[in-house]
Length: 83
View 1 (cartoon, rainbow, N blue to C red):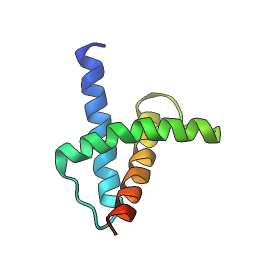
View 2: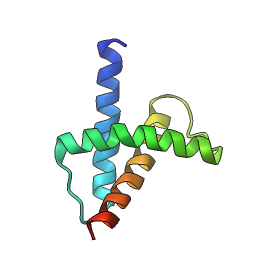
View 3: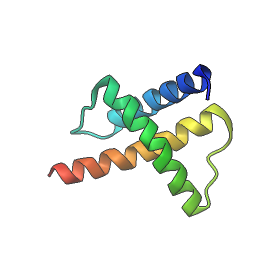
């Protein structure tokens, strides 16, 4: 793993986490939280899409979509647990 891959993870994770944070009301995670939620969302989204047999597409856009969906799931679970 080189620095380019790490920067891609952080960028995709940050963007996906930020978009998911905007989409889910009642949760504000901040910049570092958005990056963490986005990276974890990429893992969750990848697993979820594999279980459902869905292909989000290849490349950067597919990675962002996958991470965004996973981040949404994580934030919705977090919001449900907070109540």
